[in-house]
Amino acid sequence: MTNPLFERAAPQGLARAGQVIECKEELRHFARLTAAVEADLAGVPEAQRPAAWRQAMVSIRLRFGFADAAGQVPALVGELGATVTAVCQRCLECFELPLAAELGHVLAAPDEPAAEPAGYDTWELGEPAFRPVDLVDEALLMAWPLAAAHASVADCGPLAQKLATDAPETVRPFAGLKAQLERSDSK
Ligand SMILES: [Zn+2]
Image 1 (cartoon, rainbow, N blue to C red):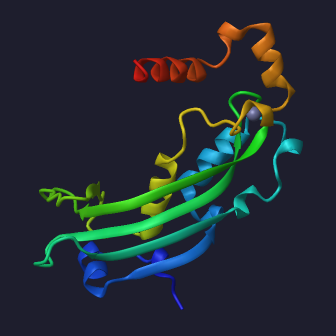
Image 2 (cartoon, rainbow, N blue to C red; image 1 turned 180 degrees about the vertical axis):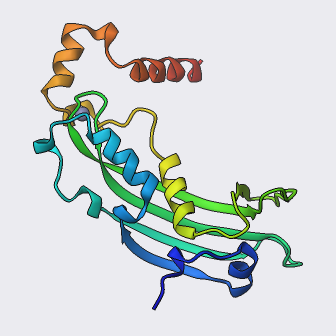
């Protein structure tokens, strides 16, 4: 049986069929996300990279339908999740980074005026027919945080402690920016 995740289809057809895609697939099927993990892991010695990082499971729940009663505007709702290996920006060691994305999007074909009913964002398709796997790939890539890091400094390797002690002001521009944002938020 073919998996509709990998089949090229037009949004209208998927919406009319009320296509549901629920599956788990290995990370290696998602080209851009795999490339992002690979580029990230290039910074750590090979011996420290988990051998099976390409086999991390991506869980997918997608449901196609129409966003409007007239059946004109194809839409997609769903949830995506994965836990991939990434390099912590504080301690430069590998850790398991959870990625999640919620989808509630109308699917706009190229050059089509995008209707955006309440409660939906717009996903602009590059082509009139698309592969859901590519959309999942992009959505999870967009969920990658600006500065991926262990959930807490306490989970970090020794380098994080060393940097924090040796040169606190030169460490992690992202962390500094985040702290600034948090300060301005709390005003
Ligand atoms: Zn860390």
